[in-house]
Length: 250
Image (cartoon, rainbow, N blue to C red; front, side, top):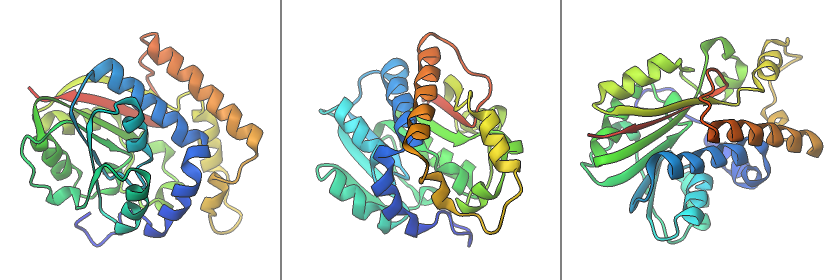
C-alpha cells in the first residue's frame, strides 16, 4: 500500500456495508473464519483485524467472542465510517499495514483478503508477526491460483493471486509456524473459471457480483456450507478460489 497503486476502490465501502450480510461469499467466508478461530486457535483476549473494511468479519468475531477486546485497522477512513457504526465498542485506527510498529500486542491477528492488495506484502506480514504476542495466531485468507486472474482482480486492485507454497513461504519467513491450511470456494472453481474466461461484452460491471437472483445466492451459500462440513470432518481442500492459513508465533 505504500506504492502509488490504488490498494482498493474506496468508493466500494458503501456498497459493501449494504450487501455483505446478504451475499453468499461474505457470509460463507465468515463461517470459515469463525470455525478456524474455534478449532485452530481457541480462547483469546485481544483480536486485531487488519484491513477490517466495514467490520463485517469483526462483527462476527464480536458475536462469537463477546468478552474479547476487539481492534480494527483500515487504510481507508471510508471503511472505518461504517466499521465504527457497526461496532461502537471496538477500537479502530486508520493505518497502513506496511507502517505498523506494534510489538507483541495481540493474541490473534486476522487479515482477510487484504495482503493481495499490498505491493510490499512481505513487509506487511512481518509487521503482523511482530505485533503478535508469543504463542499468538495469525489468520490470513487470500485469493488463490494465478490461472484464475481476470478483470475481476484488476477491478478489485489486486496485486496478485497466491499459490499455497508462496503464501506459506512468506508467512514462515516472518518467523511463524504454519498450523493449518485449506482452500475454500473449491467446488465452485469451475464456475469461477468459466465466468473469468468468458469474453467480456463491454466494460466489466462489478455490480454483477452482487445483483444475482436470490435462488442463485442461496444455492451458492449451500455449496459453501457443504464445503465447511468437509473442513470440519478434517478434509483440507487442495484447491479453491480462496486459501486460508493459520500460523502461530513461537
